[in-house]
Length: 478
Image 1 (tube, rainbow, N blue to C red):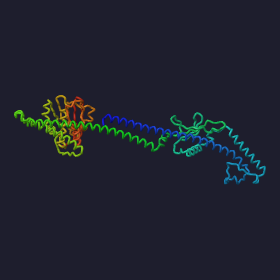
Image 2: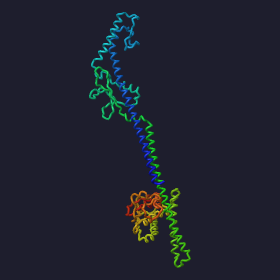
Image 3: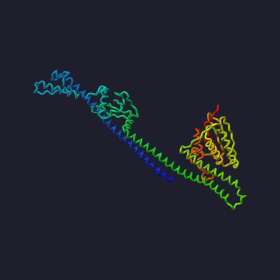
Image 4: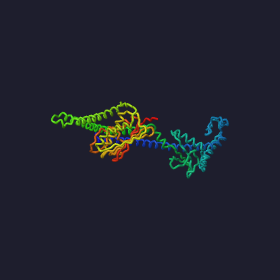
């Protein structure tokens, strides 16, 4: 699949994911709004019920107050009005004439009834007393609690108050406060008075929004969790797609580079062999020693390339076993410098050493640690557009041995430094292909250093050279 198709698929998947998340968001938002509207309607209906109940209870108290004086003159016997009587004190007993009542007694009862009705009607036209006299704090709290329980609002925290004109508080719960951000529900008390007052019952719910969200319960949480899973899955899918594409491109480049790297020494060896076997060439022109050296060098080069591939494959499978022994890094450095002396001379270059480490001994695999130094020196020579210059220095830092390989090469840009140790990665050089390789050298260096419990660091500026610093645990002989 081409990179263009991957981008198209990623954009389509991204748009679909965004649309799905937006639907989830709108659904949750609308669900919260509907829940809030239902709650508002329920509270508003409850407020009306509370106002009606307060008015009903006051009317009942008014009737009882006017009824009490009449009960003393009632035709009912004292036993019937005793505290233990089962007769209700809220109603006048209807005593028919056939039960032995005289006409005067009946007239008296009817007169009392008229007197009772007149008193009740007269009291309704009186100026209403203050709200504190009409209902107490305890009665108000009880009525609100009962109505809310009947309407299913018993699990909500609320604060209430009876307010006069100009929001003056007459009765209030302990934590009631007037705040701009609070959403108040209000209802007028005693709206049926002959002269309606200006008392209002005001209630608000401190955690109204939180309760609205919590009421959605596990459904909203599940929806959010699924949206998060979709986002993570989409991100991972796109990442894997691009990574696989990059690996495919790297694999293709690797095969191309490997073919070139292996083909070059094979062609050179084949040409040298043909020269030795060509009878048309006079023996004095064949120069067997020189041809033999070419064949040996190319075979060594071919073996080195194959060894790099095999080493990386073995390392990937976790089968690399280091043969650790006590080695002197100064000796290994000096041998590596000597091995590159001829190559440096052919490039008019120079390798300087500054071996100042007091304790150069480490536990290491001599073969692999030598390959590490050889790779770094070889890169310093290859990636240099002028006469190469390399400085190798050592010093001790704490219980570690530090080795610095500094060159004057083309350097490495900031964007490439973070990937320079990745397997198969090679710094892009446009259409310039004068330097071939597998992109395995530095990844191999990093793996070997880390297997020795060390670390490798890079300092580089483009066109200003590079400095690779190795830090390895050393042996300190007291």
